[in-house]
Image (cartoon, rainbow, N blue to C red; front, side, top):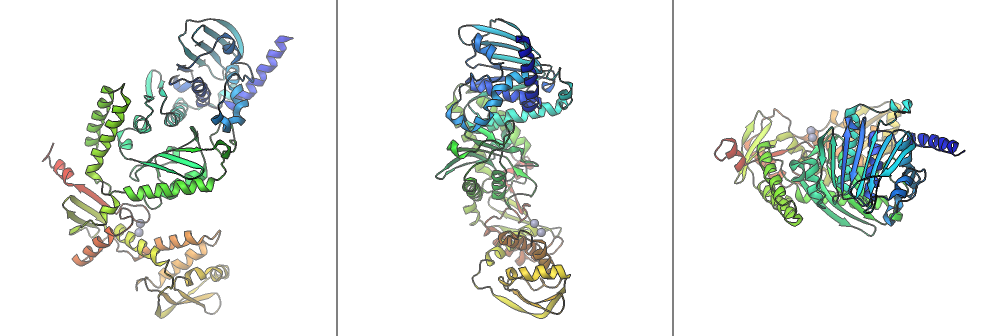
Length: 577
Ligand code: ZN
Ligand code: ZN
């Protein structure tokens, strides 16, 4: 009788395993979260072959007594204590309770745990607990999962290659470590350490331990709040970009989460400060009332829904945008690995000397940042007072300038485009648009459907100072254009503007349309490469650029100006060592 019960329960566990456990990283996740629940502040994850052969977790948590150790593998085990701030994961409790049982049903488990008094060893294979006895374990828990899915071949084939499984585990532990700077994590594969954090409690230091010096020394700190949310953390300078959003580390009440609205707000805040399709590195902590967080959509995923998400996104957007604006700098022409590597050594050895003294470590790292930034940072406010003296033009494309601090290289098109983009964007807000009548009105013939669309939307252009009339069948004629449109910006270019109106008509958004229009016009109005400029034109370009709100990029995010500091020049020519 009892055997039958075990069998059917085991079957249920196996089925549940398919829900909870899809990859080695899901096993790591369940086990490490158990360690965190057990108040561990030092967690070691040892993988063999990316977890395919074995996954071992050693923690220094409170451990379990014999009864708890046995119960932990029972379906719906609810021995865990959940705190208030776990409230938003309440939906997953069922799954969390089942997780260990499910994992045990499809693998071989060795558990050694000790809660201060007694050590217990448990061995389970395929869900059958066949050995429970004493163990000499020290306080904490050590659990090893081997041969995952050995008895469910259908699931086994869903496991990916060692490299993919390992990579998933690394990504998970890195994010977790960023969300828990107070916990020391060590992840190793086949004996080689791949992630290691010290549990210093210092987020910037954790960022350093995960991403390295080049990233940690190029982060800007943010802090803001409104009635419902408190945000803090670090955002990467726009020079530090990745090709995907994996490095948007968003932590809500201590949990790593994923939310598309938040991602979009961050991305929008970097708008025109970076290339499209590239993403910054950010680590942002959001604290809020747990009741604002809706349940997560799927227990093993990190997606969440929140009430007041618009307010949160607005707060993030404004805070990040202002931080970037206040701290922007001209990218240094040389990403000097030599300098970075040298400093990295200094940085690490300073850490090691002070390994037991967190205060000193923090101070050291901040000193270091200040030192480093002194050399390269020009704050936005200072930049506007900056004077750049022209030297000349190279290949009709780049402009060389200098001042007391060093040498500058500008991309003439990118710089001019930035100037025009800001000028046009400002003119869009003119109360009364000023316009010029065209000497020769310009007519464009459209297809009948495009004509209908254009006529319905032409008001956006008319508000800017374009005068457009109907002229025979499916034909429009431009009679005037805004004064800021340069003379040579007529003819075919007007066709491009008409196309822009037509292609934007679906879900028409005026703000977005005007921005695309400003980008398009400023690009076309700007000097191109291979165009000779007079000394006066170069001077004007330099003067106009320093007055821009964001002089560092063209409106598409390409750099417009690079700096070689005097120090870098001296270093290049070995005047200093
Ligand atoms: Zn352009
Ligand atoms: Zn551009």
